[in-house]
Image 1 (cartoon, rainbow, N blue to C red):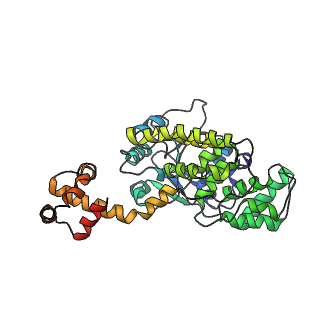
Image 2 (cartoon, rainbow, N blue to C red):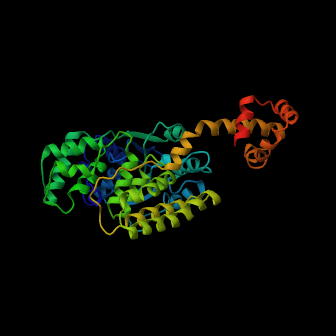
Image 3 (cartoon, one colour):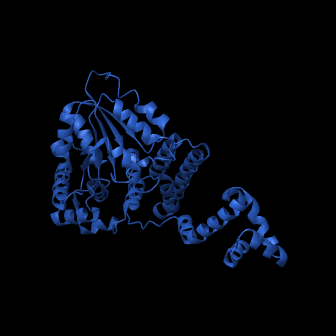
Length: 398
């Protein structure tokens, strides 16, 4: 992938980011006991790439983890707990990158952020953390131990210059105005712009306005469409996985987006069968994440659903594909109000009968319709459980 091939090897090669100056300054002045660096900004603006460039330029050993994959205290301690104390095996200076820290929920992930703060206090090596939004409420305590470095959206002029350099190295003839259109559609996301350029230019010596049709129209909230495009229109698994890591969607939601759009993208029945076979295997790990609350299985789910679907095609489709939202999510969205009302009613009932709302839904609801057919029973239950007429109407229609 061109995003990997043309990744910056030095900080000065990072496109359109003044934050790299602050990052280098922080690194040169860092000592054990000082604050770690928190790079924050939208996906695709160069946060992770800057850390890689810093490691290359300073000849550092880079240890990287994605906080979305290692979410709880034991996982974080196991992966980086000793790395922050031990000397490098290669006898080089070391830097630790914790990517997408906002992937840790803070409460349900069993002390992940608390353990991370403990490691920050103990580290003998500089740590860089990345996040989309440094001012997320769950990161409030973590911010006290960090130097915040903002990465803004890449300016159009800088994006076009970089795209021109890539075209020149690839031997591709391209009009500058066309590159501006690619840059505008990417909306300040350098990675998205390079992905778009590769999607329309790969294997060609010249690209024209007509080639842009494959990209379609990019809405501001297009992150999921960018992820789908990389998965369906390339065969590079690592880039697909990176896109999911940087997406504003949960991997499970992305799973359903992929499932919904396989037949929109692939036309060969054999390709469709291979893609769904991979999704069926990924679905097993998706279930294990829920049932066993073991977040390590999520990594396997992502690897299989990205790799399996990407490699299912024989060659890339250059057509424009309109990706549809998952029908099940549309259905859930339409019934969100009703489900909220149901949960509130069941919670009130649960308080009266001393059980959880989940038990009420599972064990009590099937009997309400029968009970409410009897007028006397209906009035007694209504008074006893403080139900309104609209509550009873909803319960009888379930």
